[in-house]
Length: 306
Image (cartoon, rainbow, N blue to C red):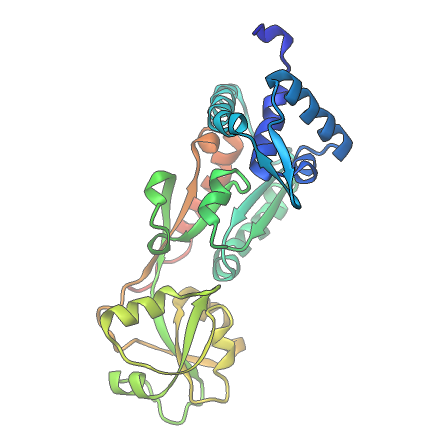
């Protein structure tokens, strides 16, 4: 095949079509009309002499040839982007670009919010899109539906397969209503195990705190289960106790009307928050600048007293 007769932009479109399995969503990501993307799919079909994507039910299914081409095309585009990035420059004061991050509510409130404030003054043309951490977070990152993933290393078994860096550690504290009638300046293990307990969850899964307590064999008198970002706000006026992340607790403690206590569980380990990204964006100047912003924020925050 004579490469001079091939529009390499078709490969960009092919990669997006394979990622999204939707003409409409691929068109949105390329900022073109749906009819233009349908025309591009037609050109790809003629180029490879294969349907590539066929409709089944309400979605598109890739043909065997398309599946076999997906990874080589992605690697090719990654190589091209790496070459171009070597000569590229990134000026955050003038660039217009959108970065997408996968992160939970806790990280958004305690860590990413200061980044939003920084961007508004230092990089007014930079936009940030934050997506919740779903069960398919690794797949979302692999398919480049997000630029960066920020989450606890303990909850990401496959983190070693990605470029990653530790940002900060955060320990757990016990939270109770500020006027709790039975808990003073300290809480005993017996109180922790017998008082009404508010268990926390992360989406449909138990939180890392609950998994640790189970592993350590710490009994709880669980009466309520709620998302860990909401849990501190449910304690006011109750006898409930729960575990909270220290950074979150100090940020919303006064508004939630809670007191914080040292956990009576000596082997309770802190969480380690990391950011992860792919080879495709590793050497991109804009992405490197964005990652450095997060590193600077993490280093600027005072460490928790673990």
